[in-house]
Amino acid sequence: PPSYEVIKAKVAECEGLLSLLTDRVDAELMDAAPKLKVIANYAVGYDNIDVDAATARGIKVGNTPGVLTEATADFAFCLMCAAARRIVEGVLYARNGHWHTWEPRGHLGQELWGATIGILGMGRIGYAMAYRAHRGFNMRVLYHDVRENEHAEQNLGAQRVDLDTLLSESDYLSIHTDLNPSTEGLFGREEFAKMKDRAVLINSARGPIVQTEALYEALRDRVIWAAALDVTDPEPLPSDHPLYTLPNCIITPHIASATYTSRNRMAVMAAENILAGLRGDTLPTQVNPEVK
Ligand code: DGY
Image (cartoon, rainbow, N blue to C red; front, side, top):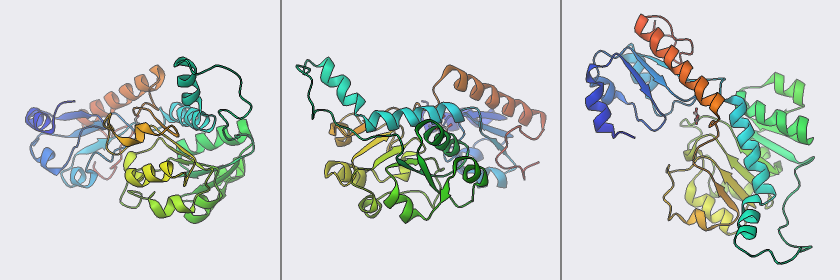
């Protein structure tokens, strides 16, 4: 990606900015772009943008909600299955010539059917994950969210619980909240210690919600059983990071929304936001609607 300095220099004449989640768009950058009317983030998450600073400068900010919900939930579900049944380990084992016989006690994993899934953040993607788990795999659904989700409670029998209950009762704990000051670093040593030793953590939201060092220790010492991460902190995770050495940790490179359909829809939505902003209209998906 272009460096911050390059973007800052190039944005000087721009009225619209199409940003990726890897681009930090802060007050300093906005001040370098006096003509800027609209920032369209090519992502549903927009923690890379200082929205308050944009609002203060009368700049509209848009994101891409809705169009990547199912793709992201599909992927989070795949990660959960892969971690539970040790699929990556099995693939490497076979590929690397270790498969000599069928072993009654080899490659044992965790059952999915009827297990308890904890959803942190019962928004669109959290709901889509819970739907797959409940309707497809007969799972009991617990969730923790600042808001009640009546739809999830009625449709999926989901039960809203406090964070400690979510941690202690979930066999699978899947993170779907946004990154904000209250969720940053939420998972640390204390939280892992409250989880079941057979628990699997899935993160397809934002890396900094989980403290990387604490997760490494929890997985290494089998405080929890496994983790599957599509997002990490930092991102990209350097290839020599010790997390990669753990067989009970699956890491993918932030690709949960990477389907042809979703990425195309995200592109169209971001383009529509830019065009609306340039026309002076409210954006179709504006995160700071107070800017008119
Ligand atoms: C998002 O949109 O926020 C995802 O992280 C990438 O699609």
